[in-house]
Length: 424
Image 1: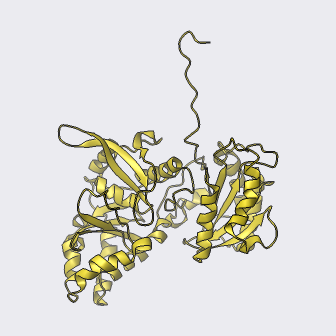
Image 2: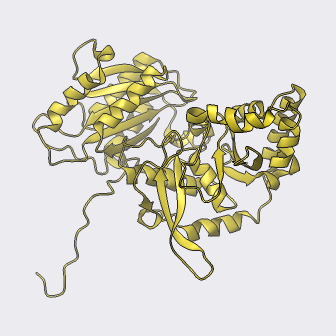
């Protein structure tokens, strides 16, 4: 069992996020503690009122929303009844037994997992300490439940990429912006191999994060600063920027470029090329088009990021291997996988409306299936898109489970001031 805890200031955002999943059929309300019976079908506002009663008792505490995800192995024999039992036991053992909370079971990943929403203000108006909650109480509760219920241990899940700690697409307002960006950026930087800044951004874009060069230009016209943004479903920046230097792992432009330089020395993964070739042949033999190729890649945990010019012509391809965490340009893998190679195989062989597909149909998949830069932010007159429905791939990424503390530290926690000389 893998536990992940985040804290934030937007309880409404957490509820809306999970309720939206329920409406889409991607989740259901599994249980609730401290709520009237039959509240599963009640409105979002009704559910918020129960939590708000506690938040009104302590308006000084701004970071008051708690979001927990518990993730289980495919090998765990688990049903709704057991999930509800685990949720109740876990919340009791981390000190939230007396709090109201809601449990949602999500079905948008390849493994069983639940999301728990609560607040850290108790009935007396006092704040429940969440600092090191993941490292201390959560770790203890996790290990106890794994032993008592015979669950696959988190340490053993590291061996299977499908069972590692999932990292979802960034959802603005669900958690602190800096915490959300930091957790995603740190994992992508740490676990992915990439050969360029663009390839690094391709991996980030799966999770609706964008890295943007910023700062003053040097004599060569290069910028050395780096900012990170959360993107909305249309690929538009919707958050305040977070400086790379302010993130604990410091994924700065210089470090990214250094890692990319080292990766360029290594040969492309033959396993990926073999998987690509098998998919290409299968789709080609069935007279499939580019869309079919992208969909088939997705089934093999490979993301394809395509770049089109203003005329709707394909001119760039980037492949994201979400099993081995490697990112390559099409030209790194062979001419068959370049923009020209794919165009000849999947686009030129179709009728005269083929270009219309690359331009219009590509946009028809906007929310679920594409990643499009917002107008006014492009440095070139082109749009970019990810392959169809990469949301599932996001859950299949081979994340390494962070050691120790799964709780996200509060980035707004005030630092102690150093005393000046002569000051008592």
